[in-house]
Length: 348
Image 1 (cartoon, one colour):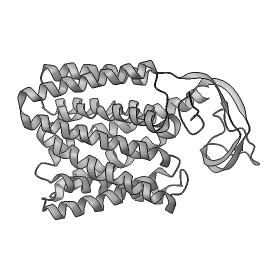
Image 2 (cartoon, rainbow, N blue to C red):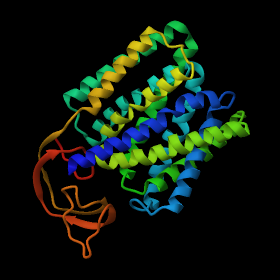
Image 3 (cartoon, rainbow, N blue to C red):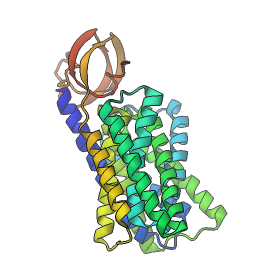
Image 4 (cartoon, helix red, strand yellow):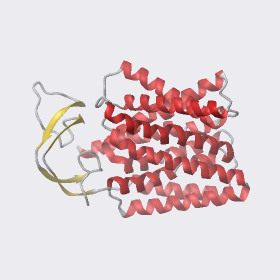
């Protein structure tokens, strides 16, 4: 049962990665001449609008987002919807879509390290090897672009800074994973859109044309709105580190699309870097974690289902599928493969 939950989490994270990955080369083309903060405002405006509309058309899928969560959402928006996308857009303009896409792999490294430092999520030998492999890939990428031009190097460094901002976003967002994802996306996107638009106006940045506005808003709706919803649902099942690891597939999708669209600027060191990144992603995704563990008795509220091996309370009439209510867990000891989700945040 828990294995099925992990498989669902991997599927959700992969879907989020693909949606996000394809936007990088599209933004590189559609955002030509548009300021970085103006682009960020358009992306997250599209994400917020799509999430708000879908929230009105669908049932709540998690806890309601209350006032207590607003400060966290504001900080998440600062890092993930203001700083990160503007740095990414500026970096794409300098480095090009292929190096920028591959540099996004560093988000997985930073997310894993922050998840370990903040939440104590377990990091096994495979994950350590994956982090080292991806850092080696980043070094090869930097060496390649440094040989070609200083602007390209600055672009890759800007994208790397964006990945750190998004890793902080991912870490802070873990506490929001049990809330309705459309509400989180709508609020984060709305805050980010307004803040980015204000900065763009103060800087006098050029805005998008009507055609650019449509493409960038669509990228935001899919790659920054729907993708984030899927990412949050994956975090419920796998925790921050594993979700970030699977999400590292996205940069390869972006790099492949950039190549198909004609970007041939990458050199041999970039190719070797991509190989090192790929090894790291494989090590991350194939990592397994299993041991005997004890669940202390507790009472809480979150979205759950009754076929996961942890929710055996009875409803009358019986409820099928995912639902939310306050429920109680008795003490339980068992042994199965698991990830650091809400029920498996024990120490090691």
